[in-house]
Image 1 (cartoon, rainbow, N blue to C red):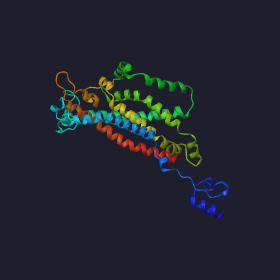
Image 2: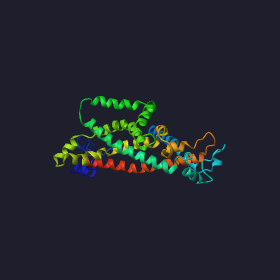
Image 3: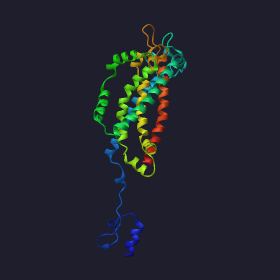
Image 4: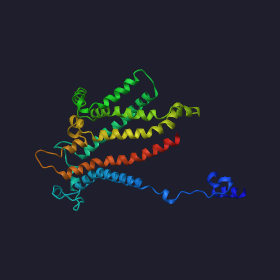
Length: 321
């Protein structure tokens, strides 16, 4: 009996059936062989195939961005060539100087003015969209009222309507309101285009947070507003960031309505970049690529900031929940 107990103590977590054989005699524990722990050939081949596919997708996604930067640093006389170089051997910053100082047309906007217009419109659209969509998503997800199902269906249907189908209607409305060629008028159009998707997305995040968490916090002594601010809002922060990214991209990259409603010194960056193509003179592709790179820099900075905020929101929400 002492032999059985000593064997069990030494083997720790090994089961009794592995320690004692038939009749209570000590038994050598079974151990998995090293060969059994190694991944099978099929699993290794599948993993290698998936890794290869991921690398191919990554290269296909990154190469256009790399080629844009490469062309922006290449002299204009070297860009149009039968044998383009994958690596810029002759670096030049003249393309960036040209893009920074070039006007869309005589008396129209240049890059600094376009950057200011795009930044003001985008930030305004982002704040207004998140505010209204957040309140609407809470109302739709937490409260039951008459017409709730119809409202949700209408929000979903509105997303299916292409913006070009309402282009002339929006143009007439903005013109009647005397908001043509104003950042306010363009911002109203952007908010109307972005807010349905934002409401639909945030509704899923709000519905995924149980209302019992707020009730438990109120039982612990929190008020309704304190329970929402300390418990619910941190859990919804990742959803706000995700929908905010979509609103930012839509407002920053939108081209059609900005081209229709804006002119002069109020052009946004996409419409300013479109002015590089001319029917009367050759296109300066180096300046075009430099301008596209300059437009991409604020987006990259925004994503670098938001990425950390999104991770922090996820961790904070998980801890507080």
